[in-house]
Image 1: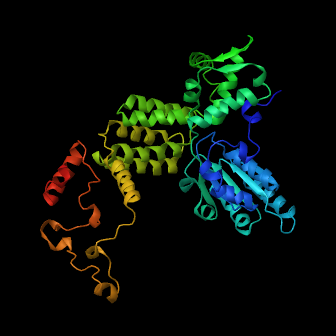
Image 2 (image 1 turned 30 degrees about the vertical axis):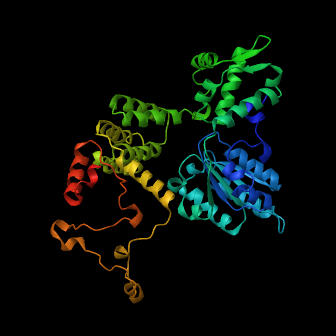
Image 3 (image 1 turned 45 degrees about the vertical axis):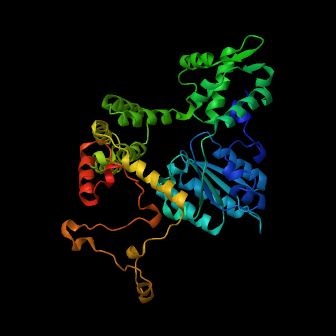
Length: 425
């Protein structure tokens, strides 16, 4: 039986690797490390199908070092210790450390992650972890501090189109079938930037259209094929990213019926309740924000509750938070403000802090004018007095802009009472 197309086309060298030029392009950080022949432990964080496993295998091949693989879904502490023992006893003096690749490392429990610490610290193994989840939440701090973190980006349109061309011209099976990629928009749309998913879809479509002298792939053909095989392109639960997107967009769009439906789809599909709860916390800050600050408190309380009670009861606080967020007024003013502030910092660099609001812990700093002229707001009526807080070059810049909702209107009125019409602009 032939291997799946995605496996047949898996790159074997960095030169064949698609995307992630910021990590493996000429002169990039991982490329330099690999070319030197010595790598340190690191974690690859990125969406599915962008080449995390492939990159780990390429590194092992390049370094010609023993390569062990564990899946966090099926492996326990004993499996980890067995691999560490093999690595320890099978290594020759001055030889590069064996590589232990752990897929979905975010699914490892604390005890499983603890069992890795000593071996990573001593250099018995070089750990390469792969995760689709934010490691700050899912990887214990001692292990995270011993690993570099590299973020993989979703593949660009050009990368995916190049992969399609490689598939129909280089693959030993597809190149014999005279495939014409007349249209690729549907292939790219359904793949969602996931290279493995893209190749799965292409293989499925090619099989469904076979029978003639040639195969012409069009958007209509792809859509019809996937509608007839709704699960065929969703191998290994990859649709969970589409469903969480629908869930968050339904909350943002103030549709509690749709939001609770997508929540039910995730629950029925066996989704990790912490994954759902974490997205609710993000949504509360990003989409409800200052229009209803209590939303973030409830979402955070939901996260705590779900961790304490688990399934099946955890569905109840998740449902409560989902409906509350969906029916709340919406504002993204805080989200926009921090992005605007970050953009401003990147454009203007390290502007000096005004002298009067600098700290002055030493006499020399006081003599240089640090803190001189600072007005302590609590000494003034209403606990406010007007003075400059932004750097000199930014005194006329506006960053936070009030949006039209009752809660922020109260904030705007208070700011106008303090600063005049500054926050009307």
